[in-house]
Image (cartoon, rainbow, N blue to C red):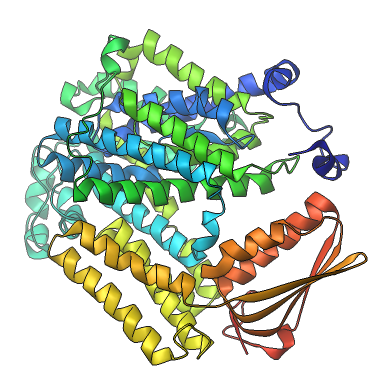
Length: 596
């Protein structure tokens, strides 16, 4: 970001905009060193927990944070984001390891590393091709539904670990097994119907071995209560570190078996594992490469965009650079045994909250990871698995928090349907299928509302083609042909992108710029629209005229609201919208979809 564009943001803010790179290190080391240490204390246990939940060695999560911090920070296009392993990718990593390994977790891990390398290479290409605007392609309700689905899966799987029970099977089996896990605590596989669960309650109380459950419950309680009861201290001694300080002595006192503790190599050199590329062209590998690229890139870019708003200096992030730098970091991480990384939103928000100023806080957090695992690996091997699972249970709940559902419901019943469908698809079928299902429904709704304003000039014909393509994809999914399933489920999204013709005309007159829209203005056209908006001259009075737009969907209205705030903040100009009085809102929300 140029000095000119930041001057307005900083003039009434917290002082001069911090310098970057070596000059920034010299100027802000005292701030970034402390914030890096705090983020290290947060990220260390979470990195271990995420790796274990992903079906890979615990050290893999630490390697990811090391590379993300020390490499990603220096190359990245953002100023205060924190890179590392994320709960949002657990489902994908675990699925790749399980499916590719065919029952052999070590083989699956090595094959999944090859998928991570391919993902990184594609992200590099996408960043260089300026695909950093890809976040505009996804409706908010589908993104929230995807995240909520991931949260449900994390909770459903980790509750068994909290209670010391090994859970297996598909997600329906895992979820239905949760009640049984409260009764059969150690060494028993989760399963059984509700009648069996109820009838087993008395016997389960008698034979219960509660060590893991006590530690897991303690971890959950600390995650929830510590930030609320000790808010000031929690800024510098985060809940995950408190959990380690409390549960490690508990585990020693209880004499937990080694299989219930973290296991990392005592020799740091043994931490490195190298990818196996023997199945990289298989349908399963291709499916997970696409899923990693879409979800990992989307989450990183969304985090970078969110941090722009929280940054005290409101610095703009270079999204294309952010994308290719994640590709470089993911490639390096996967080549040495780490799992895919993203810019993680909670850690990044915390980084800003504790006073980070530059990218060096991310670097220091990764550097402290390296020092700790190289010097004190034996301490990591004293952490109870149930404690890490307890942390993930809370994180999973936050990802699917009821308030998120309530917020989406306020934006429209249709948006809630898209979110529910996405979450159901993610939980019951597959993450990529869930996301594509939500997008399929939202595109279908836009086609209905837009009337004949589509390439086919016919709503029934558009919907028939749209449904047929997705239906064929589901057929292949049910018959375990992953490559064909992906192809036919992606085609309706392509249809949604090319099927609606969004017209716009830009006219500049003096200090005013008018952008007049025609046709349906829907989220599938937002990449093109956003590119146009980013090229508008700064400091102008911009008028967005929707008089001739037949449809403006909710995601588009959210995007324009964000653009208005960014334009005013970065250039000192103004953005107003006209022609909305000709439209009818689909609900009472201030940014509801509008139909003319």
